[in-house]
Image (cartoon, rainbow, N blue to C red; front, top):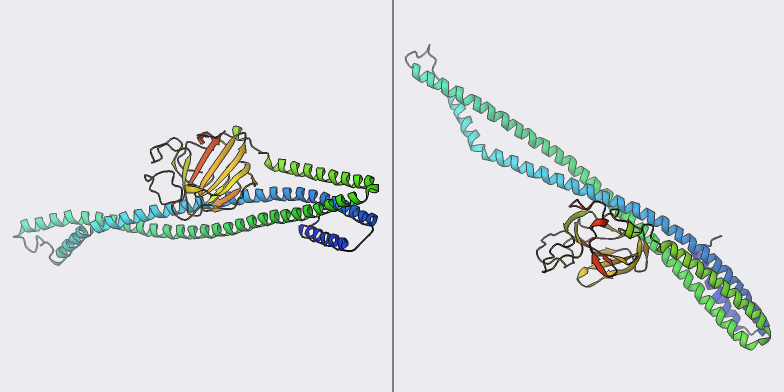
Length: 417
């Protein structure tokens, strides 16, 4: 049976307090040794419960990681849909501007034709039966009227078509704005859910560490008292030896269980050396520069530069252990992932970081978000004039930078997935 973390903490505190109270009351050495032996047996039982609790925590973290991966994938899909909607709105706006400009350019021409028709209506060409002497004038007026009216009809039909297209653009823009608003609302909800999941995972990890610290402190106190009693009671050496043996066996079992659980987390499910063409990009956006291109500083780029949306979700591309997570020089917020077999992956330019140094992560698990303006990464010189946040990705093998292009899902496309 696995005890709740809060109950285990309370039990450990109570036992420590009880041990202190016993130490203050004078007791016979053999009686005190019996108390210590009993407490050591209780400590061994608690250590067993702790090992089971650690296994349960590992399973819970694995389930939480799967939820985080799925939610991060949803957020990136929503960001992609939002970018498409914004692009479509921009195209519609440009088309509307072009149509209005064309109508404005033809305004003078349409006004002249309308004025000509009004003059013809006010002063129609004379009929031959009314003015048979002015045959030439009548013919000229008829020819002019015949030439103008078809042109005017064509202009009117074209004008009606352009105005109809403007109405259609307005309706499409209204629909697209509604879709964008709904996507933004869904994206905000997903961010709130993601934040709650991350906080829950971090709290469970904190509670586990608190429980382990309390149990280790209590075990150390018992060990110290047992050693002092051993010096006083040489005649109980055999009993003390058994107690120490039990303590050692319990500690060894706990250590073996801890190593086994860490091995479960530490072992990548997917060997990076065999993952060519299988890694997803860490964020939605456009690839601005690739490995080997000019970096604007007189050299060549050692990684991949991805321009993202403001506040874009960043996920870890591969399984591994986080060697470093925090600010570093001109890289902004920097994350270094140890993917095993000498592979290191660097992600730089994040604004917020939800991962911590020493944490084991799975591919697709969210590790932070981008900022709301140009990135603090200054590795590309002044020639890159883009106001979007910039995520820098670098892959290393045994300390040397290598081209990460063969590892991505589709290295031929210019934009990230």
